[in-house]
Structures are given as structure tokens and as C-alpha cells.
Length: 381
Image (cartoon, rainbow, N blue to C red; front, side):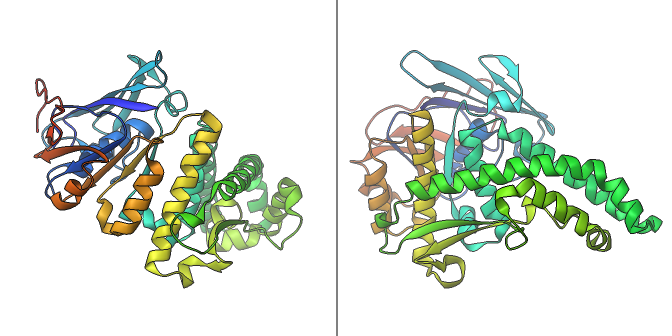
């Protein structure tokens, strides 16, 4: 998988068309010049989402209504895909080879794994960040899973609304249970799919985890269902249905759903200890890199091709030793695009990859003399 080029129109401060090249690509420039915006555009092209905001209209240039990111992806020597994400105010449309498609059809055309300071929340943050990491890894393996996630979120939202309404109207427990029944039926079906998918992807990640890359400790994942110790998880569907019936009164009192995979956890352990509580900053960084590499390896095992690896501000979270180890490991595998504001770091990596300068959203020629296209016709800053 190779991103051959990407072009932005009215997206952030970006201008022009960037011919990416292969291997390691280093974007260097001062803070605020657009390096991270280019990574955001690539991530948007891959996932149809931004890693900086949930409101896509915020990515459109001030005074404009329409923002576009388009790019060409090469899957094999013969197979190319032209991808485009259009943002019209807050309405998003996706197209492949100039044909508008659904999110389910779009996802999987280009896959990118992201490492940035916010990604450290997977290791340092709450359970929601780790659940999101698992779901995104599942999506890379099986894009139709997006429908399961979407449907589950819809059911939980409707159920929560009903629970709040039941409390206001003074429903009895029996009345509440009757009103919840059709939503709980859907919840059981969707939750069972999510539970099985998350358990399987945890097993796959553990099989690919190579914690020896940076540290001596063994890194493992443990998926912890909120129903653990409540019954037989091998019969998850029946156990969940039973717990939903038992917890009607508690859910009514709380005003929101207390049972389901949205309450699950995924523990990251080093030598059996919770890295969030007991790991040093260096161990936590190494654990996240190990997880991201496992993510990449799982994708390769399933698709026989590597995804893109995007690393924002590479020296902010990684020291020189870890940078060298990581890039050596990735060499010959992924198309890796990194950003840095330090020209000295970029210069030290010249032999490993192509360096491009970023200034005011425009990518200029790199230090090896390979031109980066800067066609600005039709674009605004």
C-alpha cells in the first residue's frame, strides 16, 4: 500500500499537491507551519476522520464552505485508487474513483496507523481510549465492523434517553423493563458481536507483540469484560441478557446504561503489572510503540501489505535511541511519514529518507533534490 500523492483544497492552511514517494518521509518546519495539518489530511483520507477534532467543519479554511482532500493510492503495480473526502459545512461525502460510496465501502481503501502525543492516552488514559484502539484495529481488519459500532452507539443513546424519560415519568421497574425490552434485544445482538471481535483482536495483537524491540519487559494485553466474574463468558449472549434483566432498577436510577461492552476495559501489562499505574514514562512510550507495531503486523498478516505509519512530532515522545530503533525496524516495510521542527534531527535522518520542508502549508523541494509538486491553482491558504 502506497500513498502516491495527496492534495488539499480549502483544508486548514494547506496548499498544493504533495508527491509523497516511498519509504521514510520527513516533514520539517517550524511549529504552526502545517506539518501536522498534512498528517491530519492523510489520516482523514484514510479514515474519513480527523485526529484533531470531531467537528470536520472546523478543518475548512475560514470563509469557505467546502473543503476537499484527495489522493491517489497504489495497492499493487496495476491497481490504483483515487480517493476523495469532501466536507461541505458539516456534511461529509466520500468517493472512490470519482464514485460516491458509503463509509463501509470507503474504509479499507487506505489504512494508516497514527502515533502522536494524544495516542499516549491509549497507555496513560482511561478505558475509553483503549476500547477505541481495539475498535480501530478491528476496523482495519474488517471495515464492515463500523456498522456494528454505529448501531451500538445509536442503541445506547436511545436506551439512555428512555431511561431518563422513565425516571421523569415515574415508571415502575416492570414498566421500565417492558419499555427497554426491544432496545435490550438489539443491544444483546450488537454487544455479542463487539465482545467477540474485541477478544479476537486482543488475541491477535498479543500474538504479534514484540516487546523486545525497546525494553526487556514482556508487554501483554488482557481484555476485561465488565461481566467478568458475573457468570460464564463463554455464553456471553445469555449472560448479558440475564444481567440486563437484573440491572433494570439500577439503570433506571442511574439514568443511563450500566451493562455492555461500553463498560469494558483492556489492560496493558508489563511483566504482569498495569503499565498505566506502575510503568515509567519510557516504558509507557515503548509499550505504545510496541502496540502500534503489533497493529501494523496484524494488518500485514491479514492483507499481505503494510499500512502507512504516521508519526507526529517524532522527537516529542521518543528519544533518539527509540527513534533509531523504530525506523530501523520499519525500514523496508511501511511508508512512514514523520514530522519534526528540528532541522538537526531531520539532517541526521537524511540517509534514511526523503526530507521535505513545510512552510505556510506548502511542501517544498527536499534536501535530496527530489521535487515536491506545489501546484496551487484552485487552492487557497
